[in-house]
Image (tube, rainbow, N blue to C red; front, side):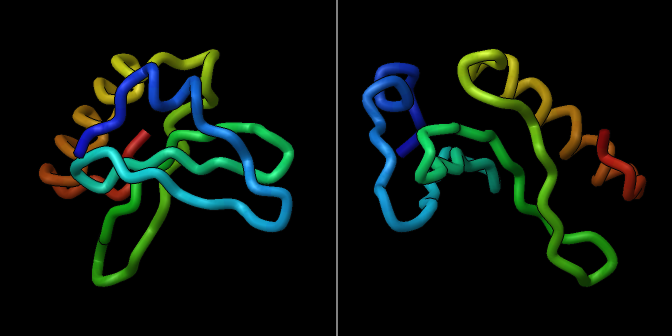
Length: 84
C-alpha cells in the first residue's frame, strides 16, 4: 500500500533501530531512531543493488519525491548509472 502524507506525519521512531516504510516501485521512507525521515530508492544497476537518496521529510514532499523517483527510473531505463 503506498504511503500517504498522514501516515508519514504520524510515524514515530523506535528507540533502538531504524526501520523502513515501503511506498512503491522501490521507494521507501527510512525512519531513524532520532526521528529523522529520509526518502530512499532501492534499485539495481549492472547487477548490483544500490540506494539513491531522494530527500528528507518534510523538506521534500511525497509528491516531489515520487517525481524524483520517476525521473531516476527513467534514467536507469536509459542505461545511465548516475540517476541524479
